[in-house]
Image (cartoon, rainbow, N blue to C red; front, side, top):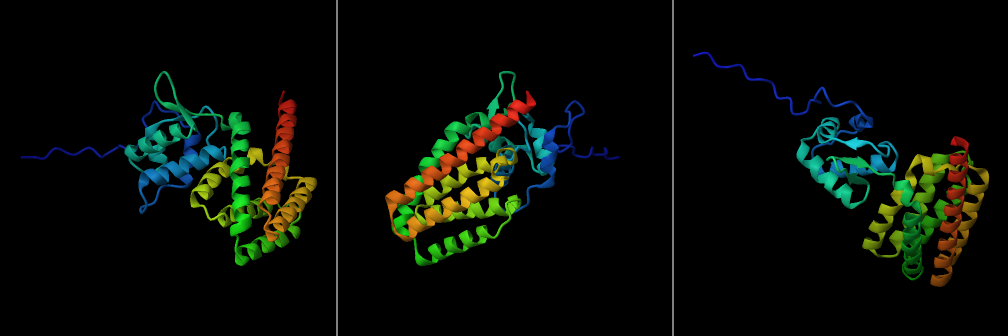
Length: 249
């Protein structure tokens, strides 16, 4: 008796009625074996949304995401559920989900970030170790040698400076929360305010004052300085975004 030829599995193929979208960019970072696939899919999608690689309004179709990341649809479904909880995607009345415009909530996000980092700085003032202070000294000295046009280097240095203070607070929960909210400000479109000489000089000045307050172990002073620093950055960011919107109008 002749056996029937088995059809090749096509669970990862995109159906002909599904049009290519920015989802295709996810194929650059396929999920690897090891940690839970759902966690990897979640981190990949979250980063792509925050970095602006998946633009607002992009439909997240399970089959497309699964194919791009080379996983089954189950971890994609779980990851999307978590993104809904993060308010990074929303369910549509007609079914499915789409990426939301996170920049619309920038005001709320920034004030949450300010409160968290201010709290961390106050705690760090009394808990920071000599080694942690030395690291901040090195980062500040490093920043002084960057040309203002070295945007990537300055962003890396700035991020490490702030996260080092958060780590010195001794609160892992606080550090995790700060890390999550800081991700929103790694979007390339939100970094224009850093790409100017004046911004670089002001940031370095602020960091030096913050560092001096930490050396003095002054919780009140360092919290005040961190909050002022972040408000100044926020005001510049809003001004830059306003100018960009006027140019597009």
